[in-house]
Image (cartoon, rainbow, N blue to C red; front, top):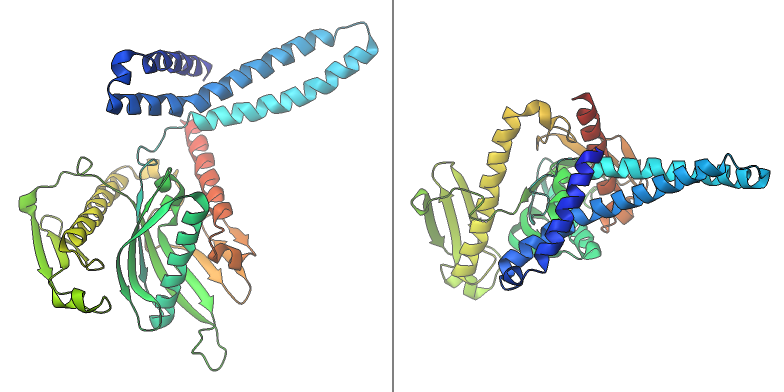
Length: 356
């Protein structure tokens, strides 16, 4: 591990020198890439330097343990215990920092939420989850843009699709894909009986054209009049867009904007991300053993979480975590859940690395 860390430190200093080179400063695109590489390695180098500093202090303290002064020996012994604990923490941090990075972690994400079993109650919970993710995005400084939706008369959604952009969005949200189950008494339930409904969530890394091999001749683009809410202008003109990707059979449509051009751009954004997600699924099928190190199977039909309103609790079934703060979670306070899932993934990755 330490030879790898020393190599990273040398690379970091090489990149640091490169950042000051006139030819790099003159090329903004190159400068941006070099600066990102420098920032990515910075945390590892700083942690490694702290590790070396603490290790040196611990070595110096061992010399003091042989001092003839009893008080000096006692002080050195007390300090040594604290330094040992800190060294162990830094060792664990470095192991986590050296884990292979998911190349998609830095990407923005496409969020898709669909009502499953439960009829109108599922559609209402679909809206609740969209609000939860939107509030969480606000808390961490991300931007949410609605791409397409299919609202119901009671304020729910049969389906809602949005783009979430910001710092390392996919790395935080990728574990949210799956079936989310809700247990509560619907507003229309006269007898006060608890109903169980389900909603599916899909989180896909937002793809660019360079990420996916797509040819214009493989696409069929249809325009039509938007249906449902949207105002007279939307319904009078053919502003809605439907894109069909013939090789895969994927169909995406968008009608939320009054502009046909904007709807086409949004639909393409969703299509590219779905194609990238499809390629990921194929890779997962081939590399099943490797992917077992991640949380769950990634199967979107898998029930991953239950939101129980009568008991005020939310349970993530993959890591057996139950939090009795459902109201806060539904208001976007999801950080504890997301961090717990990330930590679990990291622990499983460390186990696999150790076994290999």
